[in-house]
Amino acid sequence: MSLKAKKSFGQHFLVQDSIASDIADSLTLSAETGKVLEIGPGMGMLTKFLLEKDYDMKVVEADRDMVSYITEHYPQLEDHIIFEDFMKVDLANVFKGEPFCLIGNFPYNISSQIIFKTIEHMDIIPEMVGMFQLEMAERVATKEGSRTYGVISVLTQALYDVELLFRVNKESFDPPPKVESAVIRLKRRETPRIDVSYKTFRSIVKLSFSQRRKMLRNTLKGTVKNKEILSDPVFSKRPEMLSVEEFSDLTKLILENN
Image 1 (cartoon, rainbow, N blue to C red):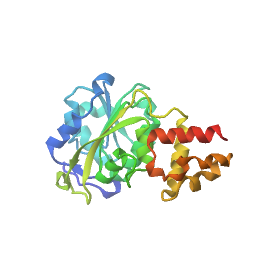
Image 2 (image 1 turned 135 degrees about the vertical axis):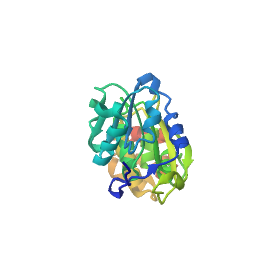
Image 3 (image 1 turned 90 degrees about the horizontal axis):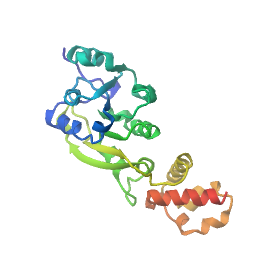
Image 4 (image 1 turned 45 degrees about the vertical axis):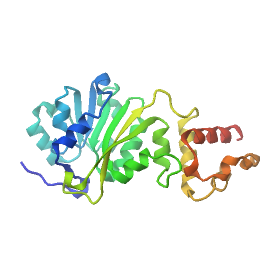
């Protein structure tokens, strides 16, 4: 049974065993959780290496043809396939609320959504390893001061340590994507880098980057009741100059003066 990648699912099949093996080996906390959820197994290039590790494993696949392929070639997964769009999966029920690691060669068209969903469930996802478009991988991992530093960088790094593990060239896929790729690892921090409400922090970060070329004084003035604090030096900066901790301090400053 040979299948072709479908554009509607953003599919690009990894065809190099060595890279798939390296991705599977990149999980560091799977032995602790014992549970792994793979997103978009496709024809099982990564799946076969994960199965060697004897995890309590489940896969999420939205393509009916791929579900049939996985069922036929990996019968041990027959009762462990979630036939659904990952974005609609209730992650709290996948392993009955128990922690698990997330892994996959992610569809690039929903890669940022996958990261944000991981963040929303950080209490049960201590680690995630995924293949991303290089530009997205760099955006998630980059530090303040970079032109690509933005909302997803700050919100992810507030809760997870992010590491860009290795790059993957286009020829490693069938069909080859138009962009370069990279594998990153998100490992949940024992202590978050913020000490404010994450919900409020997220709102301030998103608003700050809504006009990233403007000074924070101009972007955030509508959220501040006590206008005197706008003279604080932090408000003369642009958002990409603030570290995660500085965004946390900024959030506290606004809360204390409202």
